[in-house]
Image (cartoon, rainbow, N blue to C red; front, side, top):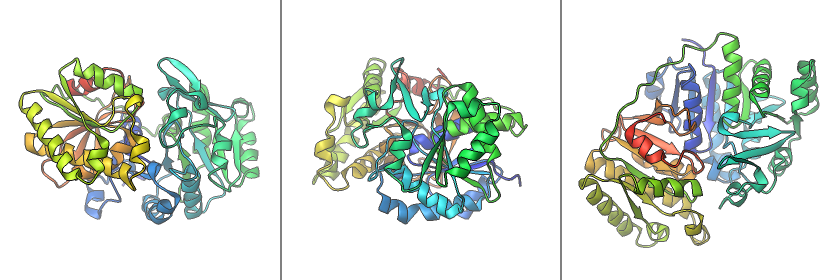
Length: 444
């Protein structure tokens, strides 16, 4: 059996699918598990070259990470891949108390027993760029420094108020945080410079990526730094995009596979817990193109009468589906409808909300025998997908124009969702016509 190139843990489900899409569409067969898999499930995908585990740490506390991440990391380390990656969102939104990337790095560094953890965040494919440690991200064809980004600077849980990722990360870990900047990466003696930075920073080193050129060099450096027993790393899917170039230069990639369109379905069910303006535009666009929008009160769905509210939502969804309509059940229509402050007054409500949306979606799939579905919202997807009783995902249809939101095939032992075609869409991902695109099975 060929040694895997990479293993990874994704801190939410949409981001985990993002990595799977990047790898599988570029000649690295990849499977994404929805938890540490059984021996039988692992064996089913034994010939794959990358293995991922989709998680929820983006919305969890450091105490949760201490309890859950060591066993997950240990399973990933046992795969003996060259690289092990703790995958985070390309907007790097996190805090010392929720989704702490620093804490996740602390745990991985100790388990892998290595002196330095390399980090790559910039991903030009996703319009994310790091320059001299600062993160920039696009929104509606403009690029903003992340602390001035119209959405991420106002994230409802982890707003980004610092663009310098070395400073942002230093609030989450006691490890020293160094930087291999664009100048170092472009220097004729780049190898020697990077070695000096790594040797002088016994903690974390961020590698800048702002273009195809710096991405290729960052990937080369990362691959050069690999070590026996696997190199633990952290960052966005930009890390995979960087490595792909290094692997290509060494002839390690298989031929790019062809992904045929799966065709159009007559009905599609979507559940959304996203408050993003991007998702708002997508919902409004969909309701003008054959979808019925069904507004859900999030406080009712997680309140004392949650069971009744969930059953009412299911009944309404089934009624619309039986009339031949696709449906989008959503808990907010953009930032102006965000009930986050009220939701946060209820202990564990955000997790409950995601799980409730997953339950609604599973019931719609079961009762109407749907073959395709979508979950919108990164945190929502992490908790909703668990309710679908799925063990693993593989890429069915990459979306080159909007990477990070592929249509996937679900695998598991639960008959109604085994083989389900499902897309997981982060709040900021996708064109305005995304939901119709998934319904129609189109690449663009």
